[in-house]
Length: 158
Image 1 (cartoon, rainbow, N blue to C red):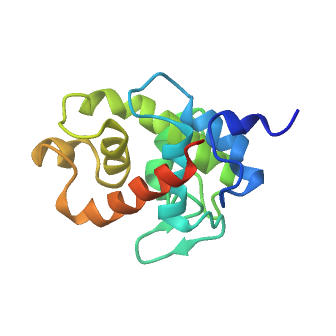
Image 2: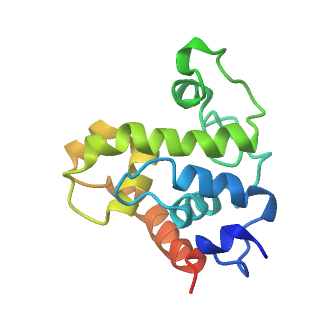
């Protein structure tokens, strides 16, 4: 039967097998325009190189998706009713919360011009208000978006 994630993600890519199912779940969490498993995979590659042990104390960002605990708290199952997460932030919580984030905040930037997928990546890095203030992804995140776009292309099934 093969790997069922091949419907969404290239099987011969560098996406770690143990994260593929989580990436598909996050990338298909809702029907948000631009959200897809290749987007989630590309963002994880750009954020951490798929490193679940990433620790960036100065930025207060941790894990495979570089969440800050205070932001992840809102998007974890149970939201603020659950205990605030603390590092290390596991891959399952980190990846699945990306889907919830995109589905929760994505509609707030639906009228922003540009590629819907890259706008979601920019939203993840910058937030709703900066996206509206700049009428797009703020300049400081453009290099990041270039990486995400390249990896998305690498991860889409051919």
